[in-house]
Picture (cartoon, rainbow, N blue to C red):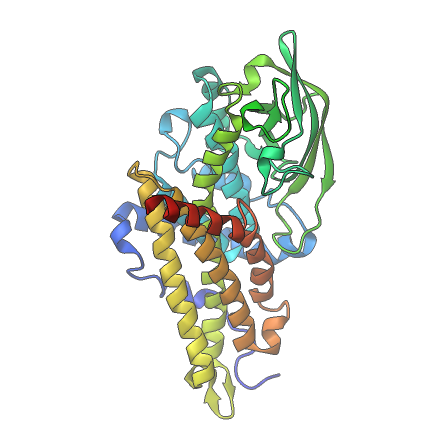
Amino acid sequence: MPEGPHRIDPTMTLMDTLSGEAEPFLTEDHLDVRAMVREFALAEVAPIATELDEEKRFPSETIPKLAELGLLGVPWPEEVGGAGMDYRAYSIVIEELSRVCGTTGITVAAHTSLGTAPILKNGTEEQRLRWVPKLASGEMLGAFALTEPGAGSDAKMTQTTAVQDGDHWVINGTKIYCTNGTHAGTVVFTARTGGGEVGDTKNISAFVVEQGTPGFEYGTLEDKLGLRGSDTRELVFKDCRIPLTNKLGEEGRGFKAFMQTLEAGRISIGAMALGLAQGALDAALPYVRERKQFGKRLITMQAIGHQIADMEVEISAARNLVYEAAWRHDQGQPYGLAASKCKLFASEVAMRCAHKAIQVMGGVGYTREYPVERIMRDAKLCEIGEGTSEIQRLIIARHLDRSV
């Protein structure tokens, strides 16, 4: 056994950090939400996080508990089954869940900001009443299907088609990398309508398909580097017939609606990355405080202490960017630039913090005895999903160009 404590409980730091963090953007209600979700995460999520990762198992047992607490519809109005809170509260929920388990964090985020938001914001009154209460209450999960084999960052190259036939749309095509795809009661997706060339966004519309619809099939379940308990599924449409009433919003406006959905969703990915970064510090800090080498505690060694300090500073900066973006969303202010900034910075901070945590912990950090190797694998998705870091830099540069 190495000198000093080998296995140190990282949760010992959970309650003595974050005091005063980003409080200019928060109210007492937000702090209460943080305390409640943190307690739940430590009691119900953290104990199974490693198991979900190792077994590549979806957190089915956690979903009903999240629903009971109202955590699957945090930012949606109470009249449609939601908790009636705001995007700051929602961001805190994703941050705290991801702090102990990235799989659980992304499952809730994909359901909320991707699977439910498009129906609430673009659907008719009948569509909202039909689907949103079940989604917001957690009676069922939602999913969002945009990416295709030939349409990733260039999402306008959608090739899935929707052809009207009587009182139905006939859907053919394939979607990939759909989070929650297997478990979702509803999936919102895009398809080309009205002919025209592939790449013309005016021919892309949005739709809703329900689980169990004939012709709607499950393809490959992805085996991933990280977030291994999260369900990432290929979805295949083979002459799938859905009612005309399942078209979401106006015909030809699906691409714009989905881009707006991703814009808000980037705040939750920023929150997820923030939680992962904090989780890395939660694991590393007690270790370097107590572990001794050369007769000294690691944190007192300049090379180690400086890396821990850098983690703390970057996490604090990321938290303020995430909370500011959520605050702008809540205030009805333009938030697209803020969302891209927080998503870009927080996702790269998560990777840097995971790397530093492994480095300062040495060999034990590289093992699965501690969560930091899992956090590193989970964090990588944040630099890719809902717009890669490269796409975020393009968006930010375009905003700056327009401001000149």
